[in-house]
Image (cartoon, rainbow, N blue to C red; front, side, top):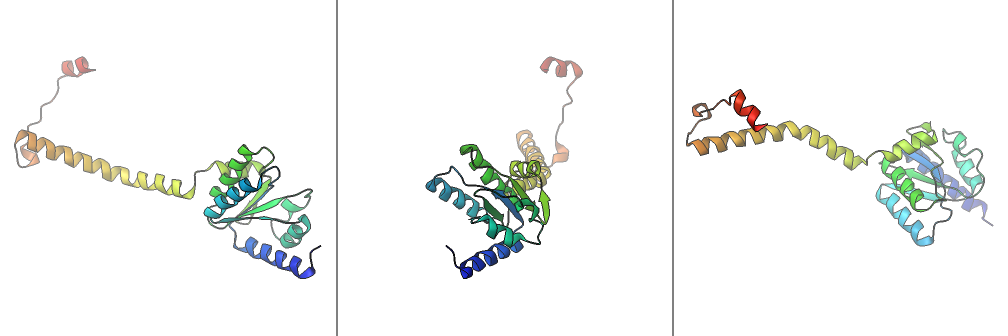
Length: 185
């Protein structure tokens, strides 16, 4: 049996995590072996997250008066809270992947930026690309016009070299006739 001080320390730690987290997900780790649970915790930790498993009554005391209170109101059986301190999508994705590997592990709800999420919204969040993937896509989008311009200027330079001229204005450009274009197509 836990002493009062131990319970208070757990509740205090949970409250601190709730205040610092961008997102909180309700899940369970039932049916997952110790090694697999360690791997899942490591994945969540690499995404700047944390998984906490404790008694439901301690969870309920920690979330009393917060937006997460309705999510934890009717808990029965063992549960876990996953906190996402940076990339909420990456933590949700790690939990969803664990659910695919272990049928008993499932996402049950969540809170993102102070708003309660439905199960469907949590699933959509888990399907989003990670922050790094989104930043990479954004960078590629920004760089596309620049790289197209660089390819164009390089092709002009190559054409100048192949024709033996020094300036692009001296290039001889041959227009293709419609007959040539239709024959090539």
